[in-house]
Image (tube, rainbow, N blue to C red; front, side, top):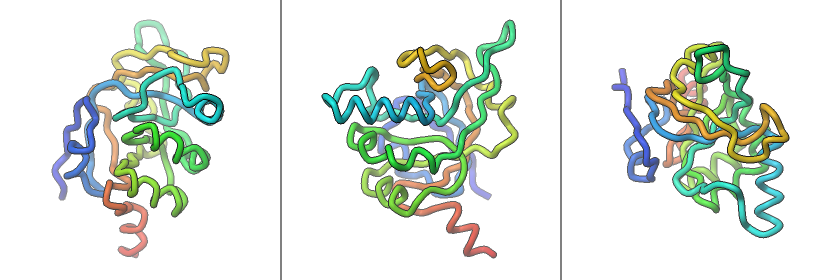
Length: 182
């Protein structure tokens, strides 16, 4: 059984060099929450003038649209959304220095290859644990595209956020490993 890996910000390539597909991780630091509509706007901004409203170098994007927080909580439920919908936006974001993404489900072979080429990691969280994930959020606030509501871009501070490594920087995939084990 693999030892759980602790990863704290800053999220540099060196920190992901020893992470392998299938490893469990506990992530702590600032991540960005963004879903489909925010990704569409980011792509449009990159195409238009190359400028987006936050720094992507060594950043982690969580594919999430958070639910409203109940009184006294930092966040409402925060389950990952299906990652394959963001595949078309990956390359422009990776070119800007995106280090990792968090979502659920397998991705296209093209995205897997891009992530290997840019030495980026894909983390996944199983569905059904949104309450547990929400308990690991220390703060959350919108930082761009507020008009999109839950699809806005959010700055999220997490502590010991539980994830699995779906793709490592070497191109290995937890989904491929699972198919080989069948």
